[in-house]
Image (cartoon, rainbow over all chains, first blue to last red; front, side, top):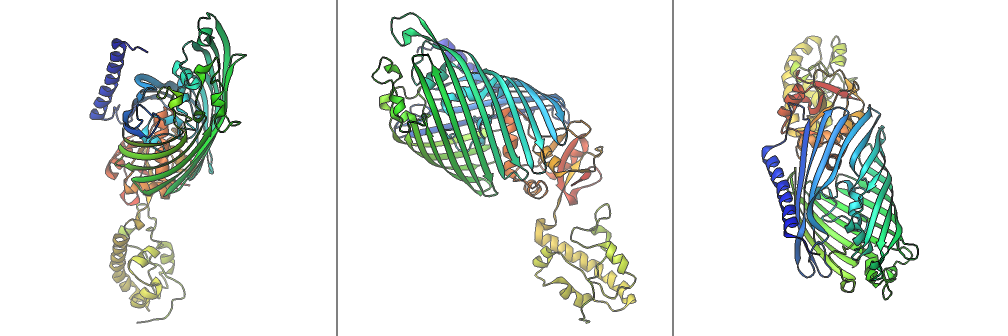
Length: 415
Length: 223
């Protein structure tokens, strides 16, 4: 795909502008209004490097080092009235061939809090609103909030990132404060951010001619934290639907017609986390039903995944973690054979390797919080499978290896 | 030296400097009320030092140790013994607090003096410091001040008053800030700045070592 010099340089200058704005803010300190801070500004920056023994992760890391992974974000929150808040976040992110550094709006919304007392608060968010999913999705691009350099990829699938990040719509939320703990509830609906990139990754092939249209999302999320903050539970249910049209020339070259289809994705995610002074145990599980249907042909991923992570906080500034992730794209074909269903057929362009259908990932990592702003982390993975690996970085199914290792190091800054 | 066991532990009235601003007994557990009742017929005075002090000074059960040198047998002797006792007790307590460090430090929740609340339930204090509850009962905005995460007083406050893990508190603030669903508290660099900012910001709340609280801020009770 040709990228014109003009558009790549305008992307570059937008990114540069974001970085300059951040530099000014960091240098100038917080933006304040009198003694009560009406404006709050925060931001983050990270840069990582990865090496993989096989397969490409965040760039051309196969038998080499890829530094094509960085994140830069800036957010602001304005609270002109007790019950009204405006907040927004801009993000620029590079992740190999999958994410090219374009500046985007993560969220931008108004929060109208119509009820607040010692027992309950409730409000409505309108605009581009973050999707609460699992324990870490809401802040997935902020390195210091992640449980490692990379998020557990079987649960926080990179391919569905755009869907997960935010929706354009509304969210009705409530927090109930009790002596035993706090219950947070959110229900929301809106337009789902289904991008061309998302379709390409979901189908694991160049998806020219396949267009999503009128994508909708509805969700409900529950979060319970006990009073002491030891236990945390999260449960969420998402439903995404979309119309899809496919130009038949995609399937049958020379045929000039379109095919109408539908797309549906249902996800149920459950999380539990137990935290103590010195260690933390986390488990998250996901069940998803992805169904792209063009009547006589379609793609289904009735998948499930989960991970468990133990983090040892052996010093206030140091943490060591061990994690095991296990995921399948099709729980009825756990060896990934469903990924090969189109191989050798007329739809061979949708042929994938078996290894794209599962992943068993064991990893360990070390994190050093240098001070309240800087963090350095490193981790190593031994992976069996390629589920969750970006198609954009690995376009040749034949070259996707089943057994591979990944090493990463990351430096992060936040304010 | 009279080594007879007292029939009950007598307690001693502390010199003014060891009492808190509103006349409450020093947190070491010495009570002025009991002492004033027994003043009339005090035949013995003992000092009951708190456990931390006992350990720090390497003394065995206090009443046995101190009863011996400080026991008084007559009312007249009591008055002069009390005069003698006060500086000694003062010195002992000072020594205790120096040796045990934070054992004597207790944090209180402080608010702007114009705040009408004298007490708050623990669930509300937690919700406020977690930045989930941002209004006072009268509907005005809460402004939260905290010390840096690595300041010992912050960790102590989280654990002893909020009874929450400090890093969980930080994760919650980060989640709110970077998802656009809330804000983080305002960080001040030390306790002097904490007291100054809380005193000068209407609707504010913070925390401070009990010993650093003065009339410029209001200390509230956590129920």
